[in-house]
Length: 511
Image 1 (tube, rainbow, N blue to C red):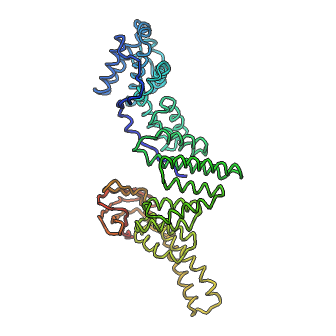
Image 2: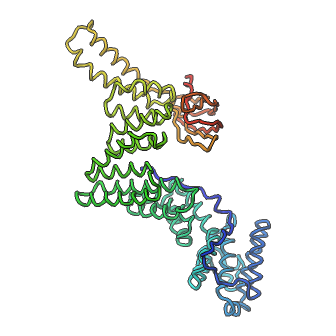
Image 3: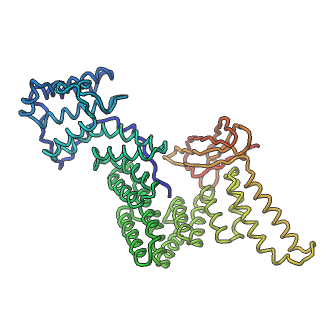
């Protein structure tokens, strides 16, 4: 199961107040009195906007000093305890987000006048201050978001790095702590993304499902995250299916009904989503309702004009995963009529035809696939499978026949081709793979990786043509991949502009 992508959070560090919705209740806490609270607040506001890091740190520490001076502290608390807590928490949150700031320090080092030699966990102290404000005035929850985000951003960025370094236990601890102070805010979906991925890697599927469900809930309403949210919801359904298919009889059927119900809720929000429909079909098959699944995929294949090439390809993948091989092939073929040079469409159709042993349809598909993607050994493996299938067909006809018999000659030629393509698959000197082909209007991005499978370091030059739906070249571009070590790999990325680009192909690499 592919985990959802982990998000980078640089944008979270830019803290700005969102406009308040008209129906949202106002926070009643006054941070403008008494004078010490007002002066501390003003110092913090100024330092947040201007100044060098050392000047900011000084201003935040002086704000804390104003609020914790033993001579005035009791009077300040008596006059406006919640205002003091709000401003104190804000100062602490700013200090915690300063570069290279230690999380636990002596109180005096950050401005506390009371018990200066004692130790303080800055993040916990800020969280406690905000909790006190929210407990007394729940309407302040939204107002505290930006201050809590200062704490959350640094923690979750570190958790992302730990996860990417495969330090999953440390990442989980930090992620859970970040949620203890930022749960239920919109941007908490990123923490649930990390948590779900960690739990999935530990095979805690119920925990992962719950985390990803919460993630999708928090993403709701953000139009920039629509596709990510839909993918997350489909992934939840896939995890639910994976868990349920190992159950016995009635429990399995009940689990599949839960999957279908979850996805039907998704379809109410995103009508016609192909991935959701494909996931429903798989759950239906596992529950014993193969007829409904077959009808769904057949209806799509019979009405290709209602769908884009991408949707048809996605539906084909779903049908293949649901073991609906004829329907999968029909969907891939329908997608290729709209985009005949789609690398993924060609490969998936080739693999599906091979699985279904529909050998006669394979040669034109594989011929174009090699034209589009000549340096992927897996494509030659499909050719080898084709000739293996043909050899099985010809073998009975060639047995006990003389070498001059046409069937014997054909059988020999097919076996020679089988060995040729299997060798090309097994002994490929280089492998080109693609990880992204995205479109933003007339701007297109292609990225992937070159794997040097030889015993010597080598540099590569990839020459790409970018094509429209008729296969015409819209634009071309080369990308140089600097020396790749023996048995090593290196990524590449290129961007082009052109109207109508839907596919690409590249020239064979000279070896």
